[in-house]
Length: 619
Image 1 (cartoon, rainbow, N blue to C red):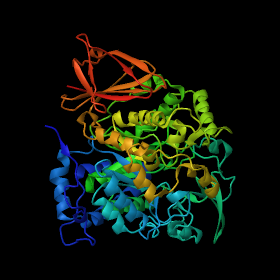
Image 2 (image 1 turned 180 degrees about the vertical axis):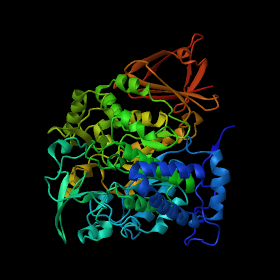
Image 3 (image 1 turned 135 degrees about the vertical axis):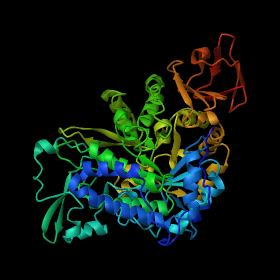
Image 4 (image 1 turned 90 degrees about the horizontal axis):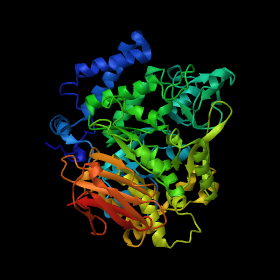
């Protein structure tokens, strides 16, 4: 029997009380989860510390449980186990909390709510609000206070209003905190309770050169940053920069406070928790300090906590890494992240359109398989950071990545580099909007061709197995904002421009715009059960001019063949679909209503315009 849809089955305002109910019986961790948790805690902190660490985590879970309403408890007990976690109509919008601006007095979060209801309901059902907490730098990713909404953006009530209509993804920026945070200020005061919240050294030479050279990190800035404390100068571990101080997870108190914050986010409406920069969670100088066993164990421990008290919440890991390392965050398919960012996809799609050849993309996508019934990919092409390239390592050569980066620079974008630990650097991400990367200024093609090229590239992330996620500038087809780079002295700002409310309304309503046509494409997608994240997928090679994939619904009753022409010329598509195990004679295109016929042997032949996309559904 097909599983039902995961809905907000009860009024979101009934998910949690504003005050805990300690009169009802306390929560008890199921024995099998307790055993799993203790095993992980012993691995992380040793047998002596494990009982005390577990008791504190248990207390935190009991407190969270006391906030849950009876309606939510019943929903999770009786309804949630029978539903799909994700379905074909799941599409995620990614936006900053202050992305929209206007001349009015309404706060950005109120504006986001109103515009989403009016223009995006039925297109997106989930909104990923990038960090909305008070911060000191990096557009929110240097958090001062985890438990507050930045007053300039709005309030927790504004978040709850959005929650009433959409599922929400919150950023859990748990690798580091702001240098202006209370935790770090207490460290500077040398409060004994916070001395081990961070990894500190007496001098910048405290780490031997051979150990330092092993450390993998996505920046070229110094790893250690000097700060003056009440007891003198200390040198802090700062993976991402001097204002982002890494937390020290070798101290169990750090893990306990982070778990408390994550459950607070669940109380405040989070359905998905994006674990930002989780790759670098654990510092062990005997290792490369990235993707190590302790990091995976912490994520699995967080999964145990959520499975016990908030099983509807999805863990999403953001790990800009080579594909094989990236998918390791699925664990065994049932014990770690339920969703991972598909970091190989953006650079491979970009490369396909730069070269007008999808062969490498096709070969890689042929290997993408369902990991388990409870895991899936977050398919995206661009983000607030730009286009990461680490996922393409081992798929594209170093020369191909360098060529792709050089092309981005020619188009007015930037390249951010990472320190390889051996004195060399290599591209880490391309700072450019997707529109500027795909449709460079000065192209001779008319606007319609540019839009077709853009939508052809975007269609690939819509049809592959997984859940599509679309950055708001990707939805609108925004060009680079070079003035923001100068203003902020930050390469990433090129793709982070604020959007006038009036402009947003115009481009989403006018039928000749990129945004309008992209929205119409998404509307087609969300109504087709063959695009369910777990629906069968067969990527097939119909020649380098095309990216082609067959999706088959879970009940095996519906089939869709998606074909995207990645070239600027008319092409002849010719393929024998019988080789895919499909023996359907008549198909029609979901975009044009045009019918396509396969002969009795399964041969399908038709012309495709430059950058045309067809979604052929079997009759």
